[in-house]
Image (spheres, one colour):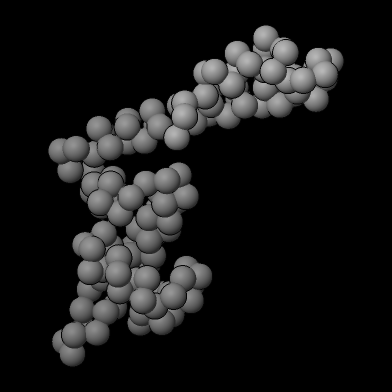
Length: 125
């Protein structure tokens, strides 16, 4: 299928597919005249690409994930899992803090050991 149809089926702009091709992430076949031609397999890869983006992966990382024989593939996936698990733990801590704040009976949060303890554990940016 032509690039316009592939873009429409994926819900992305044509220039996005061109960018992903230029970056070597999903490279479509070419017609004799040089036009990009996408197969169903390309669409499957593009959907996996979008899923990887959805979990925060970069295009260089996605390029490695898409190709099973890439030597760094497992490392890329493990690093992303570590980032996700770290984020999850931080979000769970933040949730516990906010639930505590709702019920905190101190007139000032700075007088509450639980509130100031959480605040001290958050890294400054």
